[in-house]
Image 1 (tube, rainbow over the protein chains, first blue to last red):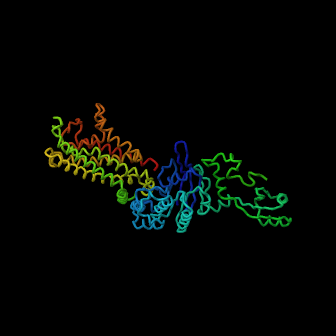
Image 2: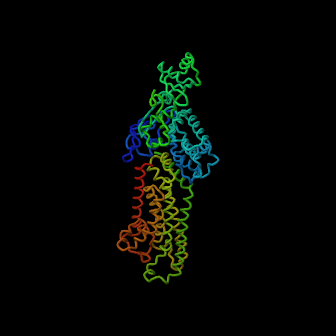
Image 3: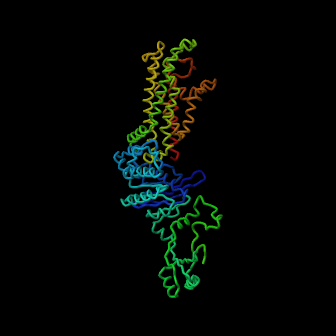
Length: 322
Length: 259
């Protein structure tokens, strides 16, 4: 169990992390989500006592990180794939870490085998690709066989095979009952791996919820219809109190209805349907809407290119109106 | 507390598994011994050309250590890289996550690296002395002469202290490039030039290298050098104070600053 209480980090006038309080519960994968610059890495560095908080505390099983005996046996962390000495071999980089926490040397070979780096164990790590560096970082996190694992953006810059591997590894580790805390700026990635979700923007807590609840609350479900008799269909829907929105390409979107109900309604009135499907707005959209006001670096000028719609929160009833 | 013995073992592994350790320490030894030997041979063959006062204050022990002016720079590089590479590689975050007690971490590293620097320093000074004296012919000193053993051991301590001072500076500046950019010109040029400028030299003789190198002189005011207001051991003491200050500063920076 990791507990953050009122954790705050200021750099001069800029507040990177702003009174952050949450708990990372044991035995599940907790996703730590936020746009770039939201303060995720800073928070994780403070959790490991690398950066000093301006105020607030982090406790790991009730203890301050600095009070941990041989911390690698409690928490393993991947912060940055390149946080190793490139002039040393992968094996020796891990050996130094193992010795400092009195972890037996055979564990070094075990974790190298686990991440698939045995063939390059004796090679200097500066020649490693990003993916190999990531694997070495994960090997160092696993070295002490810790109950808690922290990964900062583990899939960044990885190829699909590497992403797949990390995803499965995290799931396997969680299945063993370990606590996994993983940061990402990709909602889609979190949706695939996390059980619990903590969302921050500009250093502030925006959501602390289970993944299922987040999906329930934030992803709009609607029904998409397509018909050659579009005008009549729309009038019919309006007459029955549905809010129907034209969504381009001859489709109509209806919020708050089931496919069964709309299909029966169309059949009763002898309308031909070319499409009747239940849809869900992507979680990515929900995430972007949530953090829209908290995004530090906006991409401006999307309108310049022929009035393309701004990304994010404009869908359905709210913006296009009925 | 992480066990100190475990951290010492870890730091020893760190130091023996990077190639810079071997080439910096080997350079320190070879450069010092080789230049000392060459200059000893030159002094032996040109002794009669020296001025009267230089002949009167001729210090064969000190002559055999002349190579240290250059050899100490390799010690500076060794000291700087031992600490600075943690920062330049990003390893520092991994290291401190493993050993969050920063005093234990820093002083274990300094103990291991300092011990190695003293060992190499002593080997260097004894080799320099014996090879230099062999080449000085009739002008040579003997290890049994008054104060000679003190000077030879002192030469080894001086090299170790130079390495420790560099470690402290690198811990304060948290950068190998910046530390080398300051220390190399300082020890090679600035300190030596200032020590020759009237008035300024009154201050410059309290610089760590100027004060510390006094221990290597056997003859008072050897080779017609300036008279110093402190003796050989007091001079080394001044250097130790510099080293303590640099290490304390390095520790405070490591304790206060974000990694």
